[in-house]
Amino acid sequence: MSVLPEFRAANDRYAEQFSKGDLPMPPGRKVAIVTCMDARLDPAKFLGLEEGDAHVIRNAGGRVSDDAVRSLIISQRLLGTNEVVVIHHTDCGMRTFTNDQLRKRLREETGVDASAIDFLPFGDLEASVREDVATIRSAPFIPKDIPVSGFIYDVRTGRLHEVS
Image (cartoon, one colour):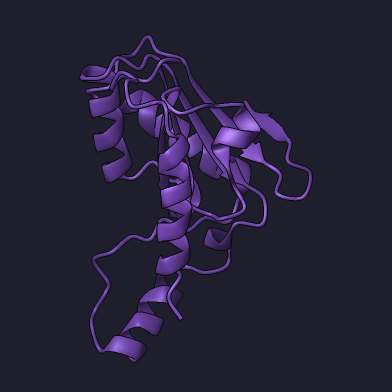
């Protein structure tokens, strides 16, 4: 059964009370956040954000992929953000498989070769945060003078732990 009727009804209720249509395009807090798509993470809630405060870039694992870098470039160069926060989390599904395992599964289930895709899985949580922070810092189109921080969100406690 589709969730679309629920989504439409919720949107109707939201739109009736909506009063933020005049927010500017650039985020008010001038920050971009790269984090995981995991449904247990609600960055607005655990960071105290409101609509219009930040760009939130989400993908599997919260990895700083080429597409995340593309979004960060636009965020920085066209929309004025001047800080980046990378947030990975405990109990992440990206730690449960390797590229080879997923590629094999896809080949078996679809008959299509996925060897060209790097799904960006990782084993060491802190190392993955450090790697993604380093990727941002070394990106040629991201200003070198902006702060880039890395954190791990604990899905059990709701707390952030900074990765140095």
